[in-house]
Image (cartoon, rainbow, N blue to C red; front, side):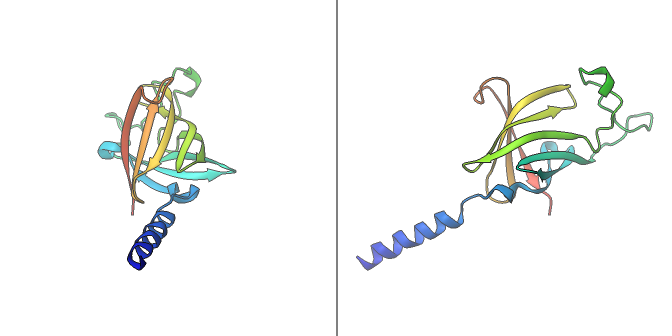
Length: 143
């Protein structure tokens, strides 16, 4: 009986300590294929992410990469480095949800949700309409 109680207490302790807290997502993350580093920050009760570095920051002609595929022509001259591409996420039940992710390669904005797998792997799921119709990428924490 003592062994059973000890096992239950141990699992309870581990489960409580393994829970994700809202600010665990803060910091710098290397995107899939190491194309960029995104810094996730908090503003009020919401979470955002901006591009802080790019693997290839310049076009072939030496100019900085711009948001040339944006459907809003007035935004096509903004630089990708420094751009906020994760917007308005709220934390609920170990998940950051109700946000959007902008893809500068396509110029599309998608609904998005994010979850942590451990402390150093972030699963970012962009989708249209329903979350089960989408794509998940894995970002790794920059140490």
